[in-house]
Image (cartoon, rainbow, N blue to C red; front, side, top):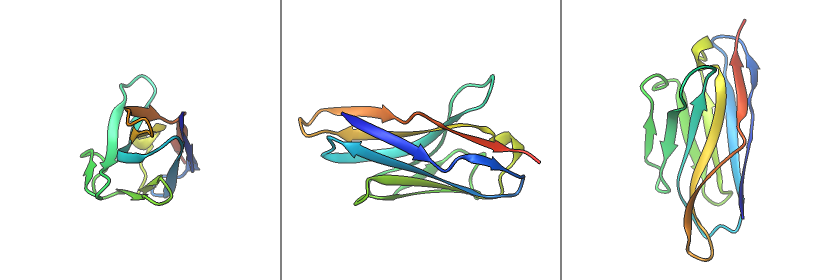
Length: 120
């Protein structure tokens, strides 16, 4: 079994910053892509950012220049640094990881989600 545990969400004022973390644990041989999605009330889930095992990144247009995704492969952890936050960034943020386990089975896993609220 593989678990993804997110942390770092909360309430922040517009223009503020937050850093989300996503720690993977369990029967993990290797992790390919890791990423963050978000879902705001009444809206569809959308990709926020993704990073390959080699460090290549991809961002939604709405967060480019404000958010930075990174990862520590040794710690099996991904991070999302969010700066210049806007009210429209308010959502539940979900971490995901493309995991190869010790049986060499490849599967996507998701965290439980962490709430980010941007409000004055």
